[in-house]
Image (cartoon, rainbow, N blue to C red):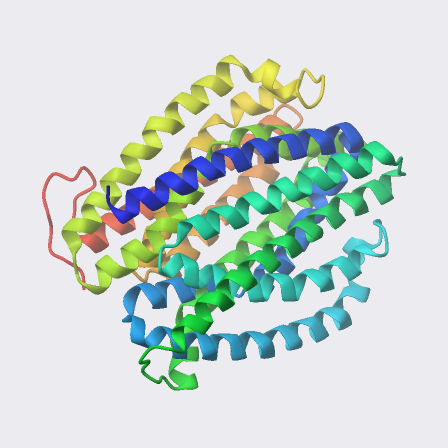
Length: 442
């Protein structure tokens, strides 16, 4: 079995267990927070994820790509410069966050200590990102899988214990939920850093080639900056989305509380169920970035074509049955969270959205691997603009309301998948149906 399939299989198995745990986490949160609380919790998460994206600086992607493309003798020097850069960047980001957080109004309706949690998580994510990038690059997927599983199992354990022992008001219950997330991130940080420095010491005994700090920073930033820009765009989109949906629904005649409840059902229930199989897509992405980077560096276009075909086949094998299950068992699945008559409808309407994303996620990894990061960002921006326009126009219509919002989301997902696919085919030299090879684009 090839390294690609071994790594993918390991990540998929562990990710499946992790997603089951994540499913339980969302059920615990739904039972504890209620519909309004779940809506508030899901509304603040995109803002926190935005800070996490900044803290990671997409170093896992840039470091793994560098490691996969370069000989082993360069790894030690690159990692030294990457660590120095991370220390400096983390200090600057922490200071900037301390100055900016007090003036952000989005935190005003939440527990005041949530701002402190955001500051604490920055160094944890930043330094974990260096270790993640290295292990992804050398394809030690077992360590990545262990870290991902640890995060979820620790958070579930903390949630169950704390919520069982104590009763909290809504704002404190949301704060505790976020505390458990930071606590699990701390455990992952300890594991990754310990494992990474054991490997780092091993490099000292080898004959290593020296690299200049400038060349390493330039190489990392050439990937990190556009990829971070893309992730920031994702985070901004997810941060805006709750307010856009609320504004559209209120224009359609919903009250503010009703709009929050429906957003909670959409993201806290339908998304939790619908994106459950996406662990396979994310596992594929983790393995694809270094694998595609190595193949493209060697100009092995035949391997790239096979990888694309394998991605489409594997996604079809799990994606199509998944959305059929969502259609047939929508009611019992959603009733595991809330006894709502609306949530099953939302899950069924979102089936195209989930399926298109199952394809788009690994395709994005292929684009990053072959160096088309700017194209990936442009695809996202175009699809998001069209999606948001449709969501607001249709969602504010009294006849459509939430159905219109979901139609807009489905359209955006279809657009980004098609743009990813057409661009990949053009770059690696195949027709859309893999029938006739065309000239390579170097």
